[in-house]
Length: 113
Image (spheres, one colour):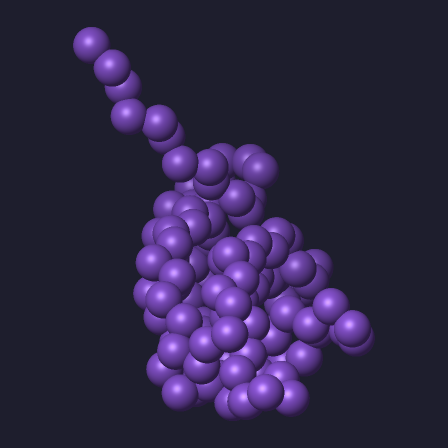
């Protein structure tokens, strides 16, 4: 009998009474801003869990999809969160090997839990 692999859960390190597991699925981007000279981008999404008092708790990112303005990631992340204390930030960036990463304005720059 085989057991399915349990997903990695990031976030709170201790058990708190009100802690919950949050599943985040990054599906796709549509019509992202052009950032490369040739008119495409190499986008990836960073998903960060923040505590407004203590700052960033953890951050994960999707794979980079090369030369597209309509990337499809279909990646899931799991976070252990305190719903009343934490917030989730989604940011889309263009991977650029010549200079630092550029922020691509996104329709959903931050979500509160």
